[in-house]
Image (cartoon, rainbow, N blue to C red; front, side, top):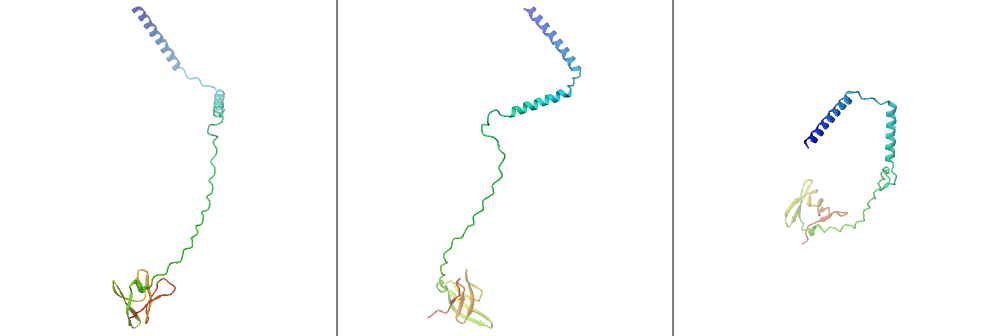
Amino acid sequence: MNWIATFFTLLALAATGLAGKELHGALSEPTPQAPPAQVARAVADVVEVASVATTPRWPALFGEPLPPKPPEPEPPTPVAQEEPQPPEPPRPPVSSLGYELKGIVRAGDAVWGLVSHPTGEQIMRAGDMLADDLPIARIDETGLWVDNGGEEPELLGYPEN
């Protein structure tokens, strides 16, 4: 049995040496250049094969690809029409808010009015605010004229006893 193993080992060693010699000979020779006509024909064959490979033989499963559509113009926005609002209810009279005229003071061209309220008394002149949204329009002998948001100012006169 040793003889057979030795024989095949020597045979494999000889085959390896012969293969190494052939490899050395192939690597030491220059590489042959292909003629240009054959290369052009080979490229044409590759292009032909590629074009044949890209054309489907069956219809596409999800449809044919289409170019993108141009964007649709946006429809004009509708103009919101305001609904007619009911007229505002009239404001309550100034005297019902707790204001009372106590007196009027004149000094030359300057005129002041002394106004009483449950929170205290104030000296007011034309242009001052009686409340947050109640400006005093003018002061004359009859009393204070307060702009109550109506067409004409409202009179805050002396209390009737």
